[in-house]
Length: 489
Image (cartoon, rainbow, N blue to C red):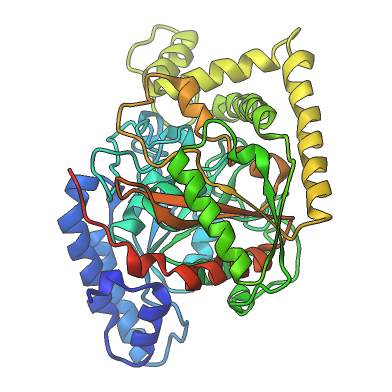
């Protein structure tokens, strides 16, 4: 087995036993990037030389006993909207094409403290606005399972890099499903933590009340390990919760007897691909076999959650992206005669069509005369969604839904129809609206061999329960052992 096929916990074990070296691990991933990146396009910036030099340096310090971190020398990929000091942070936009961050995001400080090796910055939909990674200003990312299909988005580069073995794990960000949906499309594990559990300091904002950084990994154990690294209170983020630190790997008990699972019937209704529904039903039966108590119930929030999400997200995007004005930093147009020209031309030339669409929509719903009808109403519905979830979690420990209504679609299939693209988020957005944790794990493949994702939703700060329920299923069905990528063109 190639080193790049191993999980992080397997790599850790081999490094600890000195069966392999940090330099060997890093070189194996660089070789994989050289082999795969041209066809997949998962990266915006690859740090090959920097990674090799860093590996040598860390290896020497480990051998001398100067470094004892369990994750020292483990490579990682970082979504390109997470600030990395001295390295480009572009958000896959012409607006930030040459922006080099002068500071590290809090999660990057934590990654560096563990002496992990950054292999590069990963492609995404521009400013995290999109569900297919077709809206990057630089290039489209392709799904490793089928190069004609999208990897999902906006963290498509992160999911594709993990699935193809170019990185062992990665960080993404999730505003309405942007970790979970690409994880589903690429057959990997993706977790959106509870809002406030992971610091957003240094994450370039899309919608501040919805955004959350989280892990994309090969399996659930790796997800728990990376979550251990990135969680924790941060005084630089006013939304960061000050909670006692948890060791999430200790929650992986492979036992769910007595766990109560709720199945919201509305999430399995019209619009769900039949093969997705069938695999979810099989997964639910597996949970029953494993000892969980399963019950169908009504959670009628999906349709109005989608409208609520897009109103709130676009309103916040309109506000957050106002800082990119051609004056302070980022792209500045060469075509201007006065200050007004700088503002208009810089933003017109540097923002892509999807970003412009959301800015315009967001500005509209915040404008005088429409604020009460749209934005205020959306915030009221948000409260309703939260109360519906609270009611459900008074009865159930975990809610199980599809991650996405379909498997990965073809490149170009939905990019000309924004409404159809937005409908692909129908299963995930309510989790962000309510600030809840959610995880996507693979539960099978469709007739074309494309992965299908199952979403587990928990109440706030129930990551331990979610991870154990996900881990128990994963151990029972062994998706990674039974489904290998066979790239189809």
